[in-house]
Length: 222
Length: 224
Image 1 (cartoon, rainbow over the protein chains, first blue to last red):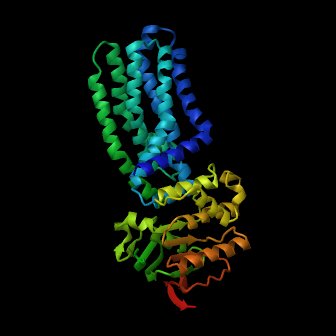
Image 2: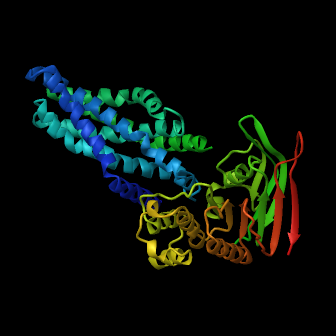
Image 3: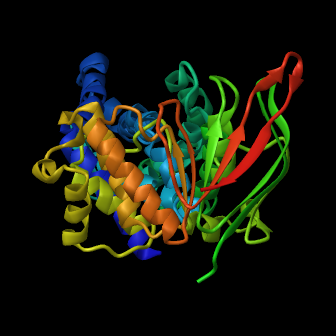
């Protein structure tokens, strides 16, 4: 089981390395969207600090959306997806491998960039750490939930827009608790509750999403 | 190891509103080849995809060793190798990497030398290190076909495997198919090309409209 997971993750990472521009677009999109806000809102330190978590989080949602449509679409078009469907391994395991690779490619860079972008908004110390922690817990959920949407819209015309409509509402709980945790810790309150809930969401998504995406893929390929 | 027996009973497949075939029954034993004939749109590919579990049939059963394939997906998939119209290759990866991924996923532990040998057999020794996107259509097809040599699957389902292949490669593929059947394997294939497949036990399945307004299919078995 572990070998299968590793094989899929390595395959997708190798593919991403040969298509580096795709990875960089996501990261640059994230950086640019976040950086536009201080320019648009103006240099009022207090205001920027208050909206920092929300802006970074919304930008992270949109950035992870960007690469989502390609999660299964490339494999679908060249026929490797149907071959993956016929591998003598549970399909949900293969989906989990693909989601893990997607997170490593498009989620982890966002987490790593976030402290730098937080500085732009005047976040300091604990708030920055909290921002990184929430993104670390939240971005895997984005990839997991997104995989369901990507699998459902596979092969449809205008699938990209449809994915956004399907998936963005499902991102709301993560957004609320993610941004909420940073705001709470900035206000001097504990963020433990928020983090526990995010952990719970992550576990729930980890169990349900691969299974749901696998079912959706079988329907889409037909 | 089980000998393997594929049985199709009363199969009906529908695409959109169109009924492609119904009441289709046949069985395929180890060491035999089924050649599916039929004009375009007669449902050859759908039949092959239905057997491979990629398309859900409208009614009927597909059984492997007496049990429905949908109830024993992992076991059946271990014995199945389906090559369809798509190459099923990642164009950014090299032929070697492509083959290695599928060999690993199918659970057969193949060495570097074995993969290279398979590619060599299909005349691709000089492009082991090239990304598949740089290869010609025929060469891509050869890379896909090299999987036949690496996976120990019993049942091969080959949808138009001869497309884009040159004469030498067609001959080579026929040799590989013959060896597989002689070895107790099973092959189901379709082709529009004039290829004479001569193996021990050969069955022909004719799909398509034989009389206007009436769907029918015929099965002939011939021993050569």
